[in-house]
Length: 451
Image (cartoon, rainbow, N blue to C red; front, side, top):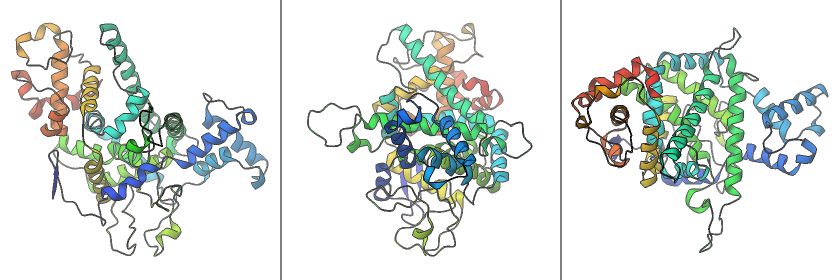
């Protein structure tokens, strides 16, 4: 067993878990399909009439429909058409939209607990991964600014809240009912959620492209660069994307279990993982596109876009898929269970990536300060009730209480060891002492308090 920040992991390398040596090559690979599309548009911007700030998915859709009207002639195909056709016409054979619809229902049924888990366990816990938050720092996404005056702090918190609401809007686009009788209609090709996922993927590709243009690949002494590819790998790489997908899927299931006091049923967990497996495929997480479970020659059947990596080919991690694809002996028996595979992959990435630093603490406290508690009046508490860190920087009595409330929920979901490493405050307040026993249930009753 391996202990890491209050997590006791029964680590079974190669068969279920990934070693650091297995995961490192995935840091060399971004999203080759999207990267090729952006390169094509940049080179042919005069011919495509598509600029850097235009809607690439909308332009690709127009090109795709024109190509269809012309009889799908192969000589007229280009990366825009190829990309759109792949995700419009090439749905993997493991996709079951009825099951995906059930996965959406799982999220909606447990929405208050899932929302708590996403914010306090996945997002704030994810700040413990320096290699991922380096992208946030480089793009100033969810991060505080350098100025510490009241105006700048207020502006930074407002901007962070807007970006959190962007993510909420993305989830709403994917999960909200569409004007259609089909199950999971929004996520079917051409649906609102389907388009939203592809647009998020374009955004990630543009960020990756922008950061790589400033990367120092030669590691020359004294050269000032924004992105160190030798230390952090390719921005928004396959391991980071897989870890993020697991934060929304398996890690959220673990958070719901913590809050509910019992795990979801196996069927509910598998339906929810199937939902995120499909979303991961749309978002560029390398995923098996054919059913290879009963195939002796796995390498011959796996559709992988990772051929540009130094390890050729890298088998897809497929973090929400049914099992780990093995390099050494593909015939080694491994249970086909998405629950086992997703949890083992999450544990592998926690061991490999989760090592918080000073930036992790800064981002965690910034996010905790962003969300305000609207349910506590300033007169209801006295200043003597609180034992706060000096660097919290709150300006009213209601803010310290709401900060402590959220901090205690965080500690419930993350564990004290990781929470201490992140500098998340604790309290000696009598009103807050029972939050971890009872108070976090208020967040289940009033999910709006999350924001």
